[in-house]
Amino acid sequence: MSEHIGAIADRMQVAAYENPYYGSADPEEEPATQGTCMVPIEKLYPNPANPRKKFDQEALDKLTESIRQVGVLEPILVVADGDRYRIVAGERRWRAAKTAGLKEVPVIIRDLTPEQEFEVMLTENLQRQDLDPIEEAIAFKAAIDRGWKQVDLAAKLGISQELISNRMRLLKLPESVQENISRGILSAGHGLALLKVAHQPKLVKNLMEKLNGVPVASAEKIIDDYIYSNNYSTPLCSGQGWRSPKFDPDKEGCAKCQDRVLIRTSPNAEHRHPYCLNRKCWEKKQQIAEEAEKEQAKSADYILDLKKLPCGSYEYFFIIAVEDCAPCEHIKDALDWDKQIIKVCMNPDCMREKKEAIRQAEIDKKNAELEAFNKQKRALINGFNPYVSVCRKHLVYMVAMAVRSPYNIGYAQDTQEICEEIYKFFGWHLPENLEDGDKKKTLIKKTLIKDLVSRLMKEDNFQILQALFIAMLLPVDANDEVYKLTLGAQEEEVQNEKMPVP
Image (cartoon, rainbow, N blue to C red):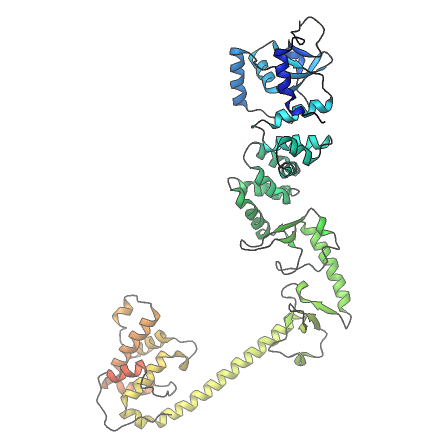
């Protein structure tokens, strides 16, 4: 096809008006095989190979009205087929002329080989601006099926080979998606993003609804998120999802399977990871691999790979030493994430029970030690009663410190709770700013301690205070804020009396 047939239609139109050889044909004479003439409109028929299958009705109506007024100004290009004529270029004019009621239309009859006929028709259609992506894809495919190479077709049409390739890929989509692309509901970009799930009709249907009105730039992210978050897929590599494949995806032929897709598992992920859309197939391969692994595990020198084990199927040895469980058939050698061989327990329920028992024993031990310590301090407090009775400021300081540090009184209490109990015992009301709903922890603590110190320094409450003082004795810190607050409270100065510091 050395001759540039892309311009053949234009040359034919020139010939129709400049070459007297073509002349005009009498309808009563034998059907013409070449030239320009008027032919009955019913003798024309559409070309089955025409990639253009749809016509904009509004534009067709306007063309029909124009033809009613001035007729067909540009002849229709045809080839003779017996006593009929097959349209090569001008099917819209022919349709509009039929609707307008014309009996005859002007045509240019050419003697073309099938290859020339197809090339003229293809060029004429693809140079139009109103072809939708699916019609373009059909035209490109028809050319490729006739022996054209993508690179040659791209050069002839003045477009990129990538465009031809991407348009033809759209034909792999379900008809419902192609229809939406033709109607403009989805773009060609949306269609390319859906190609990875084209063989999953249910998934495609759900995704089409989600992509309606979404920019093409966001389409792939939405598809990946939907596949990952709705459990449509299972991982084909370790470290993705809660299960890793125990089988080798490459050996199982997963790399070339249509159910293998690359998706991002999070919006900020730099790389896509392979996932399988056929859960039944994946589970079957996983089960076979697990059975094989169980057989291998019976060998004494078998080493597990933790990357391939489901989460929660094993326990590490911490808190409990390996020696505390040995000998046990559930202790196995395993390759950890740092590729180090370690010991793991393959009976996680048993291991968790033992760890919980150890934790509870430690808690009981600490509680017993705390109780013994408190008893010792209570006895020590009783021994300090003579000093406390004459050194009120130190006693109030220690109570305030105990209130400020709830750990010294009990695990379950906090500053506000302890203060409220003391206030309740004395029948006092909480400070007004607390009753107004001030819930800031620091302010609550400071206000309560200040008010508590002021109240406890009064003589009437001092004897009861001694009975309430059950906290640990704390060393006096002269720079402490609470201690300074205590010194500033109203009290009778006791000369030359000092509180022994434990």
